[in-house]
Length: 207
Image: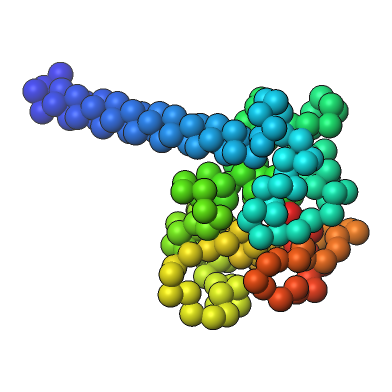
């Protein structure tokens, strides 16, 4: 092998090594963020997310939800049918939905977890641009950008995004990309503090 070919091969190997290191570092960061979200939702500290845990977290984020709706969020992820979500179930759910190409995996708890992963200051809001970028990574700019104005009707001077807005934008982007996608029996948007209730049967599909 000539010196130039050997150098080129070495450069390719070095590039692959660095890309692998970056990917592994990103995955490690993401896993730690997921663990942080699990600990935050698990208010009781029992090591499993309960229906009460979900309701308390949603109330903190400005959403009111009936107990049966919160129970559905847990049930969709509760593989061992013990009425709770343990770490392994949450982790498997997160990766399963990240790999999902159909767009029809149940996302109720996933949306909450993903929002919390970006709420690093635990103040109930995430950076507006970060939220947009997260959803664009899942659905593409063309399916997200067209709905931003509708979700953020007023000027967003603080550049913050609340959970209700994040979930609503995710819902609209998913419907644009996948068609209707509305599940039978879906009901109204949960009451959100500070926002007028919007009669939209699709948001219960997300929350």
